[in-house]
Amino acid sequence: MKPLVLYQLASLVLLGAGLAGLVKRRTLVGMLIAVELMLNGAGLSIVAATQLTGGDAALGQLATLLVMGLAAAEATVTLAAIVVVFRRFGSTRTDALTTLREQP
Image 1: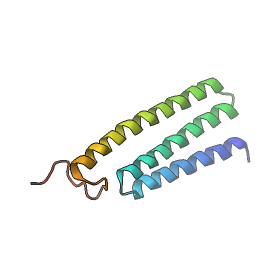
Image 2 (image 1 turned 60 degrees about the horizontal axis):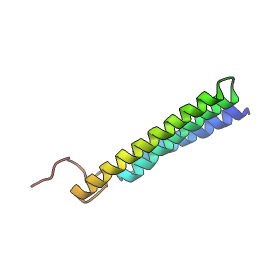
Image 3 (image 1 turned 60 degrees about the vertical axis):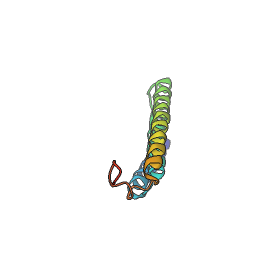
């Protein structure tokens, strides 16, 4: 097998694991980790495609840095939202969060 196919399969495994984690996890932090896995799979796919084909390697690395920056910003905003939800509702489990307002 060509190396590019192996890297693309590895990125698909990361994407699949992230998607499965997003569906199966019941806590907001677990969902955040699953989304991070998916973004790492996308970054791996971009770098492998540009390094192992005729594409511009520097452009691929810059695109991956953009994905990493997006992942960092997404993690920061999501963790802040999780802290607010935990302080307000006392739980980060998604099945306990049926409404966004407190019940009297």
